[in-house]
Amino acid sequence: MNLSERDLLYNWHPYTQHKTAAIHPAIVKGKGALLWDEHGKEFIDAIASWWVNPFGHSNTVIAEAIYQQLTTLEHVLFGGFTHDKAVLLSEKLIPLLPSNQKKLFYSDNGSTAVEVALKGAFQYYYNKGIKKTKFIAFEDAFHGDTFGAMAASGITFYSEAFQGAMLEVTRIPVPTKGKETETLAQLQALVESKDYAAFIFEPLVLGAAGMVMYAPEVLDQMIAMCRAHDVFTIADEVMTGFGKTGKTFACDYLMHQPDMMCLSKALTGGTIPMAITSFSQEIYDGFYDNDVNKALFHGHTFTANPTGCAAALASIDLLLTPEMQNHISRIHLRHLDFETKIKNHPRVKTTRVLGVIFALEIRTDSEESYYGTLRNKLYHFFIEKGIILRPVANTIYVLPPYIITDTQLQNVYETIEKALEIV
Image 1 (cartoon, rainbow, N blue to C red):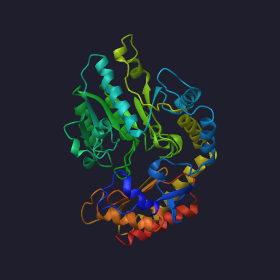
Image 2 (image 1 turned 120 degrees about the vertical axis):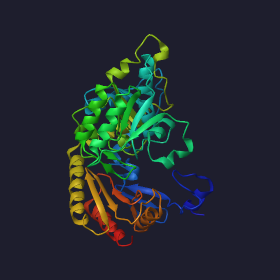
Image 3 (image 1 turned 135 degrees about the vertical axis):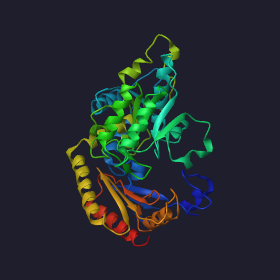
Image 4 (image 1 turned 180 degrees about the vertical axis):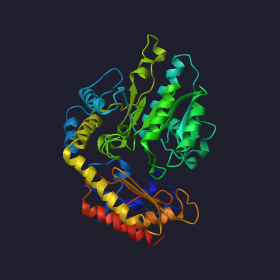
């Protein structure tokens, strides 16, 4: 049996109905923006392996940082101890974040970063003797699969089996063009009720919803509205962070600063799972007390893993180089050129571009389900052509590694054009 066949014997894959799913290609090698399967077939990784790999596969700079760390200190518990890489990473990251972010809490992945933020907001008010147990989130948001993060997410089929067992979350429309007034009015009514601990949002781009985008100006108004009514704001930058929107963080487009930020995915350059939740001093001070019961009792075995921290340090250094910033600008301009070419195609309903993110919505006669027939047809078409893209319902998006070549990117665009002819 080959690897793909052996995989079926024991492995349960994420977001997969195995009874109807096709066999999974077995990837054995990666370099740059390319991956190869066990049969030697080449794929362009046009979504940076779920948005985590901005600097290319098998990046030698990050690999060397990991190797050096593994030969020095692979791991030490962070409960009761610290180490140089966690200190260095915090010192490097804090100046890059909004100026009100003062404390970093390490965890394992984007979902747990969100979980820590939700618990931080919830317990802050509990510590103060104030009952605020509800949250506000966008419709169609996605924040993760752990219970708190799942509750904050609005894509219902992910969470419908668990309704009644989660945090109470009120959803408001995404303030896309034309919906800003409706969204602001609903948020105003909610924050005035005094029941809500925090508003969690994906800043400017809702990734899993199909790269739905909205303007920084309306988000600024929403953050100001929350602050005026003592509702914390949580920016989930798990997808948007580390250059995806053209700036280091999507929050860099804002005038107002969130109280908390959630970071993961590209944090370690796609190498080692790690996440960070950042907090304002105000929130940290809500736990700083002689009473031990007011501490944030949350932790992970691999919290602030030194090897992950070493990878993150190397990853941030790479991101800030002029070469990498030029790559981000280059991809953005190529996306804009492709948008100009394709937006008037008869099968194209809308297009969207922000930073290295390009999204195209296909015109359909009926509403497409998230993992529906059209999506599956497109996904398998791209795989057959050697392009890794994961359409969302009738939306095709491209979010490539920053080091993708112009030739590879052109291949992706041309394959999308071909896909429009088969739908």
